[in-house]
Image (cartoon, rainbow, N blue to C red):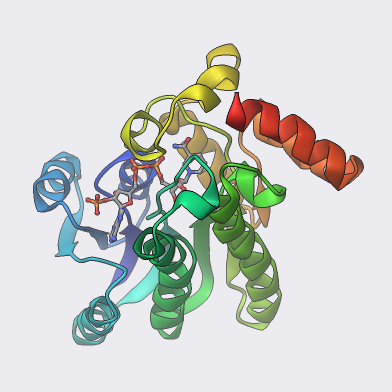
Length: 254
Ligand SMILES: NC(=O)c1ccc[n+]([C@@H]2O[C@H](COP(=O)([O-])OP(=O)(O)OC[C@H]3O[C@@H](n4cnc5c(N)ncnc54)[C@H](OP(=O)(O)O)[C@@H]3O)[C@@H](O)[C@H]2O)c1
């Protein structure tokens, strides 16, 4: 049974990737998040058979449950989308230990654990899509820990892609800039000042998801799906770190 798995499918990019996976030739879509009502609503819009898994990906037991389901269903996973994540805008030393732990656990470690759980159920031609951020391409004051967790995903995706070459499985890190219409920017990043560039060059979840999925299917490893993220990618490669910090700080601190 061929399968697509979307972690963080209840809203935002994950929700859009689920709709794109629905257009692929697969047998089942597994959607994962904590909000069951949102997952049920998504499932009602999909044509494929859907398996809803209401799980908290910061809990280790979740991965055992996913593994058990993949074993019993005889899954051949064609696509894995690691989308679950959240941000925090502000001084990183103002974050509580519990917040820091949750962020590292969800944004970085959960993607690794889910990927390790799923790889044994993948065959040639499978695609792993890790949603990082353009924040993962450079150090970012006032989004320090978030940027570090996303930088982890960029590095991890690049080297895992190399390791999986012999199996013909590709790994992509999707690095969008701020997206105008997700819960992340509306509710979960803690502050709205960073929306300024978004207002000048708005990016929408539907466009980011479709562009990045198209590129991931072609095997592209680092994907900057919009104008600002592409600009940031080149700036990060060309400018000295002190200047990057200064410019980035203007946008994140205001
Ligand atoms: N929006 C942006 O501007 C932007 C830009 C660059 C990168 N990104 C990245 O894109 C990814 C998707 O974010 P989004 O913009 O689509 O935001 P979103 O709408 O807030 O989506 C986040 C998803 O993660 C899930 N999630 C959160 N905590 C979870 C947990 N403990 N266990 C399982 N699932 C959990 C949420 O579902 P539940 O709450 O139902 O669990 C939701 O489905 C994130 O990794 C984010 O860092 C976003």
